[in-house]
Length: 429
Image (cartoon, rainbow, N blue to C red; front, top):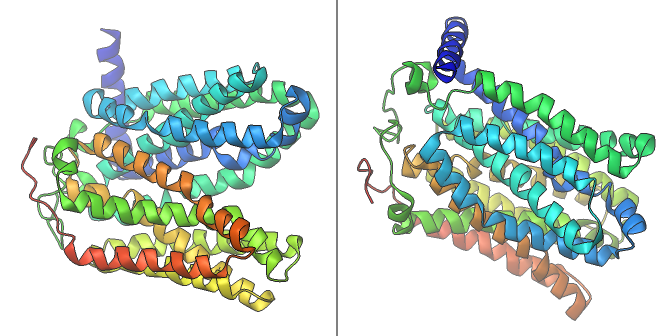
C-alpha cells in the first residue's frame, strides 16, 4: 500500500513538473548528476590515493596498478547482468540499489587491508560507479529522448567532466584534513546524499509509464528512426548478437575506447620522448578537455540531424587524425594541434557511445544490449596501453606504432559500408 501511494505521489510530481518543462530534461539532469556522483569509482580520483595507499599498506605502486587494472576488467563482466536486471525491474530500482551499494562500497574501502582487500574494493567501486551508474544513466536518458537523443546524451557526460574538476581536489582536501581512510567514509556519505533521495523521488523509468512520449511529443518517425523508438520495440540481446550490425558497432566503439585509453596512458611519455618537458606535456590534457566539453553538444546536435553512418565514420577518422598528430608532435604548436584533434576524438567517442545502441536495436531490451556492449568497450580499453607500451620496450619509440594504429579506425570506418539497421520485430529472440 505504501509503495502504491509513493508511486502515485511520484507520478503526480512528475506530471506537475512536465506541465512547465518536459520531464525528460529532469531525467537528463538526474543522469548528469549520477555521472558526477560516480566520481569515487572513476580513475581520476584514484590517482590521489596511490601514494597514501602505497605508504600505509606497504604495497608497491606496480601492485596497486595491477590490482586496479584486473579489478576493472573483472568488474566489467558483471554489467550484462545489470542490464538484464534493468530490463526486468526498471532502471529506477536498479539505480537506487546501485547507489546504496556504491555508498557502502566507498565506506568499506576505508577498511581495506592488504592487496586482496584492495583489489576487492577496487572491483566494487568500479563495478558500481564507473560501470553500473553510467549504464543506468545512459539507459534512462535514451528512454526519454528520441529525436533529440544525440543532443541529450552529449550533455549527460558533462557531469563526468565536472567530477574530474571536483573529486580529485575534494579527495585531496579530505585526506589532508582527516586522512585517506576517513576520507572514504565522507565520500560514501556524500554519494548517498546526492543520489538516494534524487533517485527515489524523481526517476521515472520511461515516459510511457506516466502517459508521456519521448521528447515530450508523439514519435514523428523522421529521418532514420521510423517506429524504432516505440517502448515495446527492440531486439533481445541474443537477437542483437546474431546481427552483423552489433559487431560492426561494437568493434568501432571498442576500438575508439582502446585508442583513447592508450593515448591517455602514454601521452606524456610520447611528448617527453619527442622533446617536450613533462609539465608542458601535462597541460595538453586541459586543452583536450576544454575542446571535448565544447564540441560534445555539437556532435550530439548533428547526430540528431544527419545520417548516422557518416557521423560515426567521421568520429573514427578524427581518431586516426589524432594518432597521426601525436606522432608529429615536436613543439608547442604541434602539441596544441594534437590536443585539439584529440579533444574532438574524445567528444566523438562520448557522443556515439550510448547513441548507437537504441538507434539500431530499439528501446525494449536496451539495458541488456548496453550492458553487453559496455563490457566489450571496457575490455577494449583495458588492452589500450599495451601496443604503445610494447613499442617503447621493443623499439624505444612510438612513431611507427602510432601510424599502424591509425589504420584501425580507418578499417572500422570502411566496415560501416556494411552497417544496416536490422528489422525490429517486438520481442524478437
